Length: 142
Image (cartoon, rainbow, N blue to C red):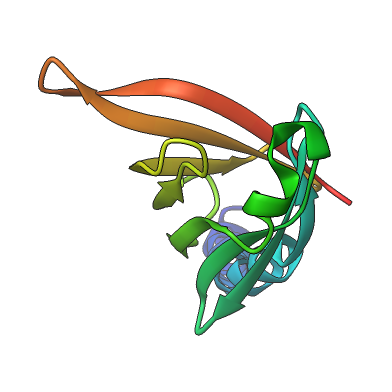
């Protein structure tokens, strides 16, 4: 029985290495999957805006393609809402710049996936010299 232990350890090490290589490959290719899922039309929680998100060289931009007429809809069409969004690996918050269409302010934000068809935005602003989340929104893919 004892002569089989080195062989079992070698087999376990081999299969462990194979699993690590497969896992590494999977995580690296998951970035392309996340980027392709992010591209498309999204609607905010209040369903007052629809935003098209597209990318150029893995940097995402988002423009308003539909807005509720009660909220100055015609003036908002075509306005950039998201700029310089760069995807990060899974379980890391992606970062970009949010352009408030009503106040004209630029704010950094973090984006997190909430399932396959939902994303959560956390808008960040400096309050008393510290970064603080001032608003959170969840967008749903159409």
